[in-house]
Structures are given as C-alpha cells and as structure tokens.
Image (cartoon, rainbow, N blue to C red):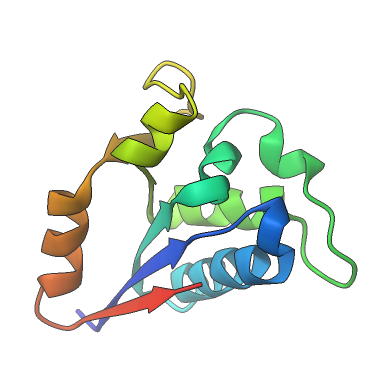
Length: 120
C-alpha cells in the first residue's frame, strides 16, 4: 500500500482557511486511495461534535460536513485527548466513528514506514 497521510488540523474558526485546508487534503487523500488519519486538535476538536461541522462556512470551499463524511467513510478521525479534556468533550459526545487518543498514538502513526505528516 502507498504512503499514508496523517493530517493534523490545529485551528477552527480561529483559522478557517487552515482548518478547511486540512479537511480538504484529508478528503482528497481518501478519494485518491491513501490511508488517511485526520487529527483534530485545538479549536478543530469542536468539529468532532454532531452538528458543529455543519456550522462552518467558508466562501468557495466544500462544506466541512461533506469533507468530514468522506474522511469518516474512508479514513480515521481522532480528537486529541488533551484538547478534548480542555473542552469537556468525552467519548460519548463525539460523532460515531471519531475516537479520542493522545500523543503516543499520534507518534505511532507519524513514525510508521511510509507515513507523511501534514500540519495545518
């Protein structure tokens, strides 16, 4: 199998273009057949909650909800443990298919042979 993509989104409404770029690249990776892991950190953690991605609006961008659905269907979506805790987000709060995991899991993914890590 080809190179895997580990993409970290570090912003939400505080950096809407960066956030959208992370989701867009993750969805494009899934569409291209890559193994994709999208990490939601910082303010991006909110998009793991039901309905939050639907609220995101950026002109000339594919709706964040659509991009998230693509990634959930063909890749993995993870919320950073500490980011979730700081926002009182628990495992029962997130969209089905989203997991909460920490730095050891992230390091394992980015250290795998053939992995490409991208941070937005």
